Structure formats: C-alpha cells, structure tokens
Length: 526
Image (tube, rainbow, N blue to C red; front, side, top):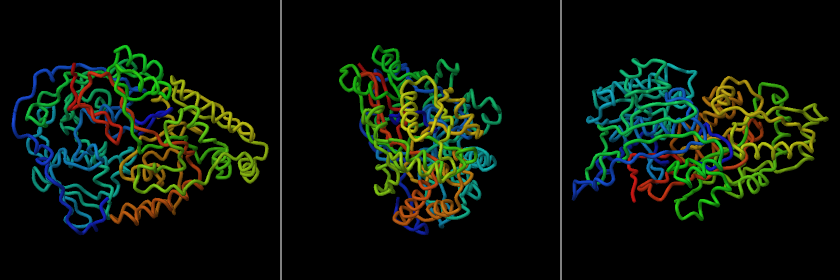
C-alpha cells in the first residue's frame, strides 16, 4: 500500500545461456521440523479491511487497478511470488531453469487443486498464458508479449518459449500475468468471472460475495495446499471483508474505532495520528511507486510537446510533497524510485519555473495560455487538495486547469478509452524496472493511456528486456527516462511509501515491498 493522494492503477548478472535453477519450495518450508501442531487459538478470525477505492474487476486478464490486486492475490496463486526481501521464490512452480536464452522450463507442484476440485497442472498454465496471448487488447498482453508459446511437457512441467530473451519474465509472473485460474471455472463462468470468480482460484481464500460500493467478502479455502512452519493448515482467518472507504479521515476513524481491522492506506494527517496511537500498529517503508498525472498526447492542446513541457515547468513538486503530503514521499522526476536498482538521481530536468512555462507556451503557439481538464478520483479530500495545488501553481503562467471528479472505476474506464485530457493517477510500482516503464511508455503498452509513442524509447525498452546484464539494462532505462521526461506525456510528482496500519490484535502481518496485503499467515491475537 503506497501512501498517496490519488489512486493507483499500481537481477542477476548471469547471461541467459547459463542455467538458472531456483531452489525448491521445500526450502521455504524447511522450518517445518519439530511440532506438527498449530495452536487452535490462531484459527477462526474474521476481519475487515478498508480499501481506499472499490475493486473494479476480479479477472486478472482485464485488471488495471491496485485494489483488484489486493483481493486477487489472496484468491489466486501465482507461478512464482515475491518474498519480504523482494526475492522471487516458488509458489505454484517449485523450481525453474533456462535451458536456452529463449526457453524457460517450470517444474510445478503436483498436490494443488483449484477450489472447484479440478487439478492444477501444466495444461492449466498453458490455458492461462494463452488466455493473455489471445487477448492483445488486455492490459496483461504487453507484459508477456515476448512469449511466443507455452507448452505442457507433462503434467508437472511447462515450457515457455520466447520470441527473444526476456529478462523481466519471472518478475512479471509474480503478479496478475502469473495468476493461475481454473480453466473449468473460467469457461463455466464466462463474463461472470469478473464480478464473481466462484471457486476459480487455488489460493488461501475463496470468493463469497461482492456488493459493489459496500463490501467484498472472501472466505477460508479449507483445501489450501500451503502449510505453516508447524505443518498446520493455512490460512488461519475464517473470512476477510473488504470495505471501500475513499475519505482518508473516515478510513482512520473506522480503524481507530474498530469498524475495520486493517487500512490499506492513510492520509498524511492520519499517519501522524496513527504513529502516536497505542491501540494501532503503523509501519512504513519506501516504495517503488510513482504518482502524478497523465497527459493525453493525442488531444488539443496537449498534443503539442511544448504545451506539455509548459505544464511540467508549472508544477511545484516540493510544495505538493511538503504541503499536501506533509513530507511523506519523495519528489519524483521519473518512473523509477530511489528504491529501484536502475534509479538515477541526476534525472531532474524540471523545477518550478513560471518563466520557462511561459516560454514553452509561446513556442507551442499559445502565448496567452491554455485550459484543460484534469480528472481525479472522487471522495478523497486529499485528492482534491493535490489537484487544487496543481491548479493554483499553473494559474500564474496563464494555464487554467479545470478539475472534474469521477469514481475510480469511471476514471479507469475513461482513461482506458482515451476519453480524457489529463488524469491524476499513479502506479504502485514493480520490482523490475520494466514493470514501471514498458506498459506505460512503450507504444501500445497496456497502461499507455497517454497514447505516447517514441521509436527510440521503444528500442531502449525492448533492448533492456532482451539482456540480463543489469548494468546495461540500467543504462537503457536511464536513457529511456531522459527521452520520456523530455516528451512529457506524464507529470511525475512523487514516489510514495508502503503503509501498514492495523489494530494491535492483527498478528503475523508482513509489510511487503510491493505494498500487497497477503493474509495467508495472518491471525487475530489477543
């Protein structure tokens, strides 16, 4: 959960020809010796979790929202996952190896059933990946577009054949592209999957009900395959009810009074209160996210790069971070945060400079200024405050920015349909830099609602995907960032932090670098 005022969509140096075999899941469970009983007091809790926007869809193929991920990662397992150290570790795949630069073979668990009783196997992997590859309009497609084919070798081994080497593949498969759904359930549910994925996953929890705008409930999967360190069954919790709460102060008051047990985010004012509240547990760490606003490069007047750069010069990033965010966050000038291994502190072309804004307006043929409309997600006073700051910062240069509020779901629908001029929307971040760049800034990328296109950026991002040399990838990404910033299709404002805010009786809850709330090991204590 990255702390933010607006909603989110969301390594090795070895050459590819060397076999890379990652340890078996047995290692993760190696601490299982000794007692094989788990205290019964850990079992049976029912908790409520506040989300600062409603879920949009529970079909990973079509999802473009962080809030969907928060729920889906507790329903669906992935082929591989990220641990608390941002290391890729087994999940449904127990191990994997590159047999050539373009062939990756996974060994799969053989003891997993989907919640509908059908087996998880290589055929299921083929079905799920082909579902993405056969839907080029989906947000997932650009994440795995380097995959040529997926083949079942036998029931427990599956081979990914790549069009060319693709170094971010494992990192990509830790998220929605790697979520495995029951082929039988997907075919049975059809379009109903998005709103009611009944028995579709193999994860620790099962879908129960979703009353849009009110709550979404998932319940314990009694046949979940993973065990705890004592060999006891997981998960401990009986149910989780997610409640959308868009107002930051309302979120905090619900947490403080016990109406919810976990908040996925808090506003800056509420963070200060939570830190001093002995009845709550608050944790935060730097995140991989970026936040700002998209500029649709195909509509007037934002189809002119000079006009877009005028807006860049007209935004006072430090003022927003220090005033609205109360210093919780880091001023951003690009998509990669200081946490990323490809980050460069030298990429900072824009500061607040009204003279430069006026100069760019003149060069863009608009010396008397422009007007445009910024879409923001409704219900959040902090969203409104950030938008109003931007509005007031741009005004002295003759730029009139109108603010229009929409529900988060409507905002996503409008931006994905390119029905906007500008939109305040961020990205929760990914461990591999490719996840913060390719889908957003490559031509036709799954989240490139700005319709931004630069052949040089495309080439650099493609080159970075095709090598496992981290120093070369860093160079490619930093060169791409320079061009992206110059072309100004997105106004980067800040990088957020991951937040964990809970009641004191929520136990064994790990703050993950991704900001995802995973509840398989969480229990309600005294």
